[in-house]
Image 1 (cartoon, rainbow, N blue to C red):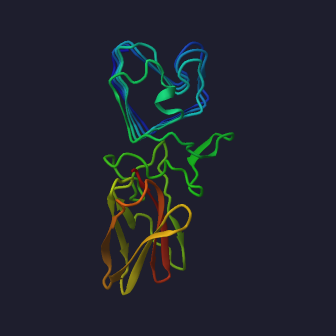
Image 2 (cartoon, one colour):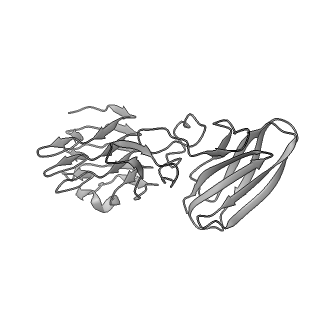
Image 3 (tube, rainbow, N blue to C red):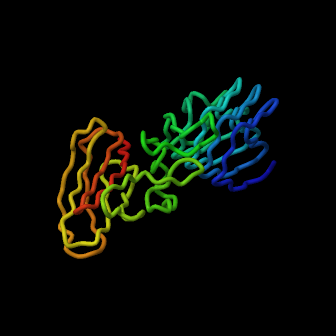
Length: 259
């Protein structure tokens, strides 16, 4: 009540409430900020399987996953009174805005959010890491305004930092040597990478059906940081794979174009 905590990097799962708020109750003039939390498998009989919001409360949610919660009204989020506003950005919310019942987000916002299965590695075994093989669309899909993950990539959605890099070859590229600025992006992005030099680097980008949509070769004569600009304004939004090859080193990363 009457509080504004910051709740970050928490996992809320398999909780049950009798009436409302299976995991979190935001009530009576509360304005909490929830950043990078995973809220899943929680339940209540009536309002807000994951979160209930009521009585002049205005929560802010960034980089959260709300999936698989159940309730009579608002499986993931229930806004129980009409005097509340919910500000969501870069979250993965099952059922999207339609699932926020009965009053919706009020005068809040719903920016760059996904309505896609987060692809937990093993939901039944309570393993809520994200599948990096499929891969989960929540990886590298968090807010570009938040700190980068430890591997140097854009922040992931949910409670766990997780690399998407698939590294092969005799001498694997070290974590954090490839970045996209930004990722996700709209019309264009910069691909920033570091290799030891003395040989060219080839940058290829493929769509999800394996068709090559971009290719460029960069001369890496000296060790250090190199940049490639990719203008994708003529391509549809979606997931793309960027493969960088330099001698026997190869790294593949996922990029998301928003529109």
